[in-house]
Image (tube, rainbow, N blue to C red; front, top):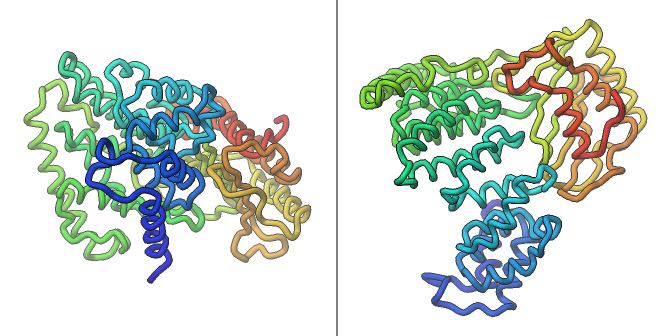
Amino acid sequence: MNRIVRLALAAILVVCSAAPMTAQDSGERQYTPEQIDRLIVHARSGSAVIRPQAAERLARIGKPAADRLLAMAGTTREDLALLGSSLIEVLGRFDDPRFRGLLWPAMEDAEFPWRPAVSRSLAHRPLATEWDRLQGFLEDPIAPVRLATLDALALLSADSPDEAGGRAALFNELAAARLADENDVVRRRAAVLLNGRGHSRALLWLLEDLKRTDTYFDLPTGEAARYAAANGLQSLDIDLRGYEAFAPPSATKNLAALSDLRAALLARAEAAEAELPEAERELVPRTVPPIARVGGSVQGARIGLLLKSCRRGDYYLRWTEDDQLIIGYGNPARVQLPEGTTRRLVAVADAAQEANPDKVYWGRPGCDMESFRMPRVGQPDARLQQLILSKDERPAPDLRPAALSTLGAAMAASIPTGDALDASDPRTRDLARRVRGAFASIGGPIGPR
């Protein structure tokens, strides 16, 4: 029995031991305070498999669990954060307005550590009165928040009989704008939602992802996109014509499948558009925008920085031998830097390794991470070294060693500002400031520019 299966079975046994399964938890079974508290412990501190299952069980229990969770959530956002992401994510499943009174201030607080969980909680049963409040979060720096907001607005636009026509049309415009989102997961979700509203041309965005082969160093970002796009199309009962996501798009079988699938999707789009009001037929662009297209491979990346901040979003940066800054993945943005920029950064990276010769990891596992990729000192042809800082939602002001703060500051300082960047590309807009903010939220400020 493999490890994943064992973990899953263990999770089921632990959760079921806390509260036996019933046909309907709420109203048919009385749960003791001890049983509820045991589930709360599992939802806060169990394994990654156990936590969401325990939280889901609590949501099904109903009012007894809600009352206990409300008492634990306290009156401040600091108290709410202590519940952890799994519990926060199910608070919106309780029909209790007191939870929304706790969730919305957290949603609007950029420093709250579990905002993706908050956004999914609010999106489970969004209220018609929250339409305007939600719209602003389509521009949030955190992709999972944008994703949950799309889902919430989709529900509201379909469930507002008094304003259904107006809200449906507005939602379609908002979703179409997300087809140029910097995050491919958000783009695919927008495409699927638009397809369900008659704008089937958006499925060409998923077709484009089926062709991707990109990587971020050793991370198979293109392969992951192929699987996600294939699953998305299959969930709509679309025949993939023999396409196989695990094989390269250039494989003979996949080339034929992609050609057939493109013809089928275009026919589907034309048939659907014929049923749309004329004013909406051009809502989805006829061509996929550059940010969503298949990109060429990145050659000569010598040093890299991956920032994942639970408060400021994710950043994928690479510096190449010919002094290009590569921003993002898929079809990344490329910015030409002054000659010698990468060489100077590698020298700073060498000093960081020499200052910490026996250390490659600092911190504790969590949603915040800084990953520095660099050549190994004295081994220019070896696999790149990776130095990682990681932490959970709690502040860790002394986490980052001084040499890595120096390296982070040099990386941020190399990012051009102003007219040197394309202001229309969301990945490059105000990039230097945003990267410095992500550094500060993870391991503390990196010092003056």
